[in-house]
Length: 339
Image 1 (cartoon, one colour):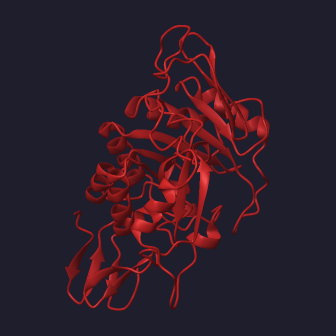
Image 2 (cartoon, helix red, strand yellow):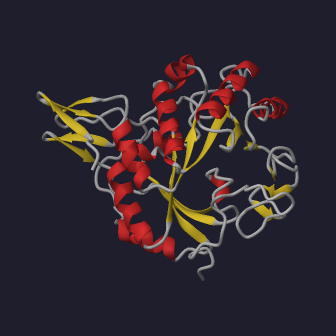
Image 3 (cartoon, helix red, strand yellow):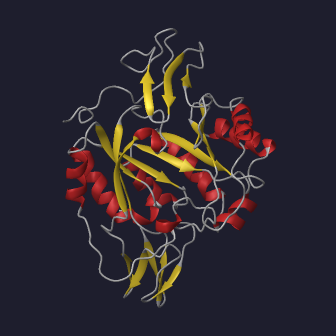
């Protein structure tokens, strides 16, 4: 198991994420989920569920990982970032006090197996990185039951624990919140470089990877930054990595106006010069939802909200018109037709 903490005098140093918090006895780190309990690291949210739902896989968002199926999604409380625009702040910026109900991994897997058209379990809603021990216990049990595992994360994690996450995770969606460190320092309380390193490690591992950037007006919406970001993704991670541009709405501590839809579409056009699969989300639009074969231009998946119509593909996820592989994770899955 990855090293999660080190003894540092009368404190422990949490080494799960790049904050590397120094924590005195009885205190917690930045994420509020990891506590120094008499010289040992305690996950106070083990088994604590803030919410669960059977979601379309596209909601994660994952457009190229068993499209059109469902995934049983769970989350807890806490986060190792302090984004003042957080869309889930009611759970990510909240701490747990007193007695709470806890759900054991066996029950989570049973719920997943009993869910209709379900391919697995997604760890989402709040930041999964800080939930390491629980995710590992659930994921290993899930894999023993032929279920897939998904992590939706900010990617702010140290290398050793990430390598272990990769060993039991099938697909990741990582928030690349901007492509400038000033944004990260000012709006999230973190740094961009560890996120970039995490993305490279995941991409190099061969696990499925998609990336999401929430576009906030005046902060990360310049055309120059979008060109730089997607050039980096293409060079370091590959031009086939699906990239999601998401529309921002005022939330938590910010009152910036919602992202202009035409601006979002313009940024998607810039991104498409470097990446083959670019999507626009969190807005009603006929643009930026469908998957189009980059080789022959045929539409192979049409999306309207979470209504998915797959077309012009063979059973292996290849374009019927030209043979280009579109989806590596596509074929029918044992539990997707359950019930």
